Length: 489
Image (cartoon, rainbow, N blue to C red; front, side, top):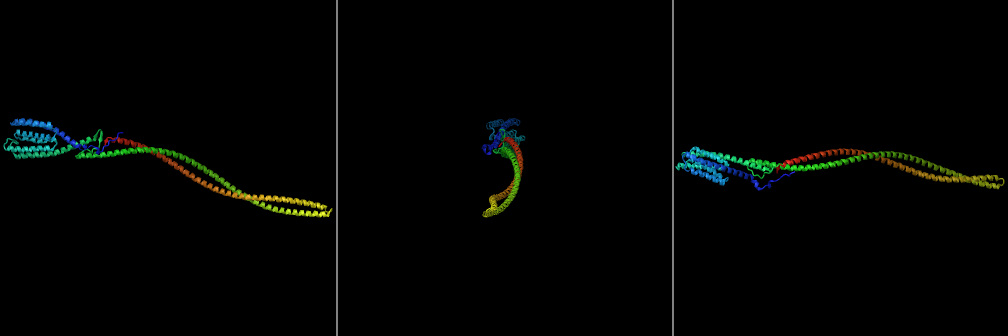
């Protein structure tokens, strides 16, 4: 891509500021050179024409001298000073001199005075009002001077007869024509200057195949040229603004395209992450449902354990009550055994006394002694049995006391177990409620993730559309930039 050629007005060379004026002067000089040639031809033609006029009026005296002299002088001036200020005034005045020569050799014939008006019209070719004024002054001096010389009898002719009033009338027509011609010349020169300035502006616009809109260095004076210059400068500012805007648009479109690519990539990554998050959320939701089911099962099991603990507590309480009853009954049995032991002791004493008495009785008491011995033996056996029973009862009492204590401990443990089971049941209910809330929250999160995934998909589509729009904008800016390359600003 070619870069736009940018050149500010301040960077132009100073000579360029008077380029239009130089062009006008050069054009006027070219016109002057062409007009000098025309004047030379007219002078030579009029000089030659003076000879037959003089021959017709039989006034050849001097014409053969002045005619070649005027032609020669005009030729010298034209070939040596062509296009200068001198020839611009000298050659028209020499043409006026040939008209004066025609009037002189025609002996003041009025028809040859038309040459004055024709000459005043011809010298307009210089497009210089001062030349017309100089020629008018020449004719005014000529008419007045020659009329007075004619009146004084010097053989000089302005009209057929000296008549100052007629000269004044002629001068009036000359002045009127001169005024009109000067007015026309002013308009012609202004129009010509305007054309030259417009042509200069057009030439300045064409810069090697480009439109050079920065024509502020062109010095123009005519209104139309100024308007065209102002229009081109406004267009220059507009194109510069458009160029700057195109560059900014191209940069912005490139940044938008890059941002769209990044956004599309990030959106795709976000969509993938959201898909993974949605999958993980689904797994978490399933795990939550499974945990809730386990919590429900655990709650049921805890309820069963609590019920079993409650039943065990009742059984242990009944066992403790039974152990207390057995302990009380053991104490009563111990008391009975003590009574039996006392009776056995007393029976043993009675048997001893009976044996003593039987011994005292001799032969008569022998049978009674045997009975007493048997009674004594039974009493001893009863005492031994009572002693054993007492030992067993004591052992049973200790076992019963230990069992009662252990049953109390078991009852307390069962109560603690029941309390703990109640706490576990409450905790499991809280866990179930929390799991339910988490499951509901995870369901909401999953739904939100799906919605976000849908939104990200829409964002991805929008990013692709933005990328396409940015690409189209960049292509349009490239085309616009190529279009403004036709202008040099």
